[in-house]
Image (cartoon, rainbow, N blue to C red):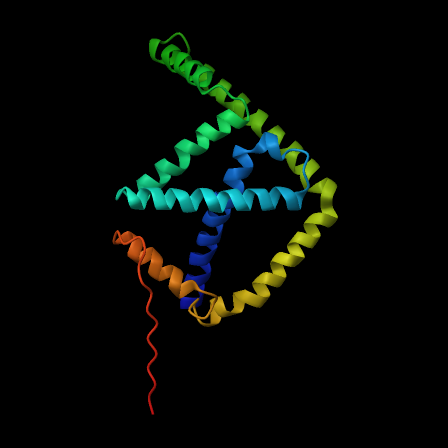
Amino acid sequence: MSMTTLVILRFAGIFAAYTGLTVLLPAIMFRRILSGRGLSEQFLMCYTFGNFYIINIVFAVQLLHISGFWALVLFTAVPGILIWSRVNRVSLRELCIKTGIICKKILQGSMGMRGALYRVCNRIKAVLKRSVRLFYYKVICNTLQWILVGAVIIALFWIYGRNLLLTYGYCASDIPVHLNWINEMIRGNLFPMVYIRLDFTV
């Protein structure tokens, strides 16, 4: 695998994870509040809250000296579920009780696997129908808006993405500083001093 291909794959994964945490997760958590607002307003609200949310989670786990992959996943998912249930008025207690009843019926044999799969399939169909309806109203009915968004994204990748591929990220914005912060946080150092060394040779 060439270095360029590896960089493309790595940064595609980073971009997907970052977008999911800073845009998609807040969109799910605050779905009821965001409904009825414009696309740009929704994006700015999600992006602002998502970055604030992730930054404070990272600070919290670092200050508690429990930083790690599973700690970050736990501290991201649990508050997110609690906020989602509170904002969208979903009772987690009732949801857990219903799930527990279904599991109990399966274990006792009063509900077979076919019945459980039927319920799961119906739930998946309902989610898919809702997703298709949401896609139609949010994307198809606002085609011009999404064309403009796509044009802005393509322009940003064209302006800033070439350095990413030609110099493998090390001349693209402040990526070296962020990489240093990530490496130091893995070592448990929350506020590292960043030194830039310049060597001049004749």
